[in-house]
Image: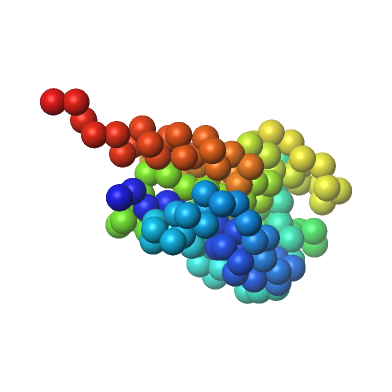
Length: 168
Ligand code: SF4
């Protein structure tokens, strides 16, 4: 059985920057939870950041790959550089995924760590731009498929492919 890495905030854990959760009531997620497939994980907390914490965005809305390559930082509204914590959290997520042979993740869309289609533009004005979070970028770079919570049916289709018996 393939296990699935899931943003802890989607599982009801109050780990977001504002001290809240973003609990998903998705039925597939509930089924997978009952099957024991889900591995909740919060990269920012595992990277050493507290709850609550200041919001953070990737400068220039440059995306997770730019952070991984050292071309962009992750900053709070006052300019505090939290890049190292974001990188540490991303690597911790990859370590967990590798240890459990996880090949699929469902992560909170829009987050500077967990976003897979959208992040923010780095100016703290609520504007979304296309891009990946830091953890998503690292997981994808290592062959792990990442889906946002609004793409759970796509994750299910991918999971079926992974679990399809090999034709002899
Ligand atoms: Fe949720 Fe990811 Fe943000 Fe943690 S880092 S609170 S799991 S979106």
